[in-house]
Image 1 (cartoon, helix red, strand yellow):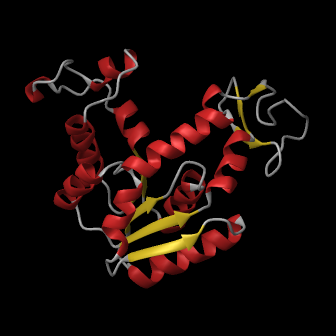
Image 2 (spheres, rainbow, N blue to C red; image 1 turned 135 degrees about the vertical axis):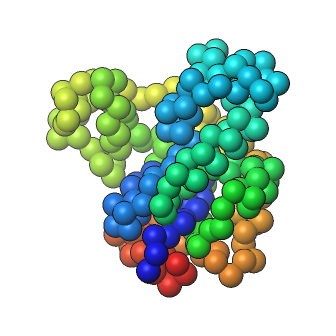
Length: 215
C-alpha cells in the first residue's frame, strides 16, 4: 500500500489531534495542520498576493486571521512536499474544500462524530500546562498531582477559550462554517463517518480499518 492521503474532519474536542498523531505514526505520513503550517511559514513572501501584509507572520503577530488565499498556498506547499499525509484543521469552509480538490486527491475522508453535550464536557474539562503546553482533562486524563503538569511540573490552567460559553461559541462557528464541508464529502465513496464517543482505542481501530480499506 502506498502512503495514504487522509483528511480528518470533526468539531473541536472530537479528538482529531490525538488520532492524527496516531495516523502519522502508524502509516509513516506527514501530520499537516493549518497552525503548524502557518507557524513554519511565518516568513513566507506573499507580497505578490496583494494582501495587507507581506508575510503570514504579520497577520499572526497582529492577532488577525490569515486570508484564505494565503492559507491555501501554505497548505498546498505542505501537501506537495509530503509523501502521504493526514490533514487536520483544513478545510474550514467550502471555499477551502474546493481549493483542496485542485491541490491533491484524497484516499479517505474521515469524519469523527461527537454530540454537543459530550464536546462541551470534554472541552470545558481541559487543562493546559502554562509552561510546556501539555494537555490534560479533569476526568479523562487527570495529572498525577492536581493542578501540576506531569511532564515539567508547571501550573495547569483553564484557558479562557475552554469556558462553557466560549466552547459553545466555537461549536456554533464550526456548525456554520465547517459542518457544510462534511456534507460536501458525505456522499463520496471514500467518506467514512466514525463514532467519536467510543474509547480512544475503539475510535483508533475504526480509523485504522477505514484507511486500510480505502487507501
